[in-house]
Amino acid sequence: MQLATKFRAALAKGDGSIVFVGSVASFRGTIGQPAYSASKGGLLTLTKTLAQAFAREGIRVNLVAPGLVRSKMTAVTWQDETRLAATTRQVPLGRIGEPGDIAGAILFLASPLAGYITGTSLIIDGGLSA
Image (cartoon, rainbow, N blue to C red; front, side):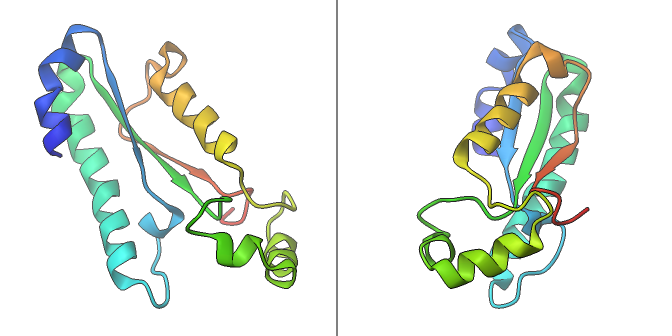
């Protein structure tokens, strides 16, 4: 919130875009991680609120919501072959996400190609939540 406010004027000069990184936990609880889910849910509503507040200045605000993506935080899953296999069986695309999957979505939302998109969230989870 503080960064969005700090750079608001500069973003307005260039039809700027803010893309927050949330999680699929923005939409549902996560057993054993109540603070994580609550913070991601808060980020979802912050996205919608700032999108409305900044829209008249030409600033778009959106959120990407990754599912399981190969990262340091998820290593406990993808470094264990049994866990990884069990997880990928549940994902319709048959694999976990890669950082590039998220980067591409962020680039799209930040680009002029998404010039009429604001206040939305893009779930990137290989179809798991479909």
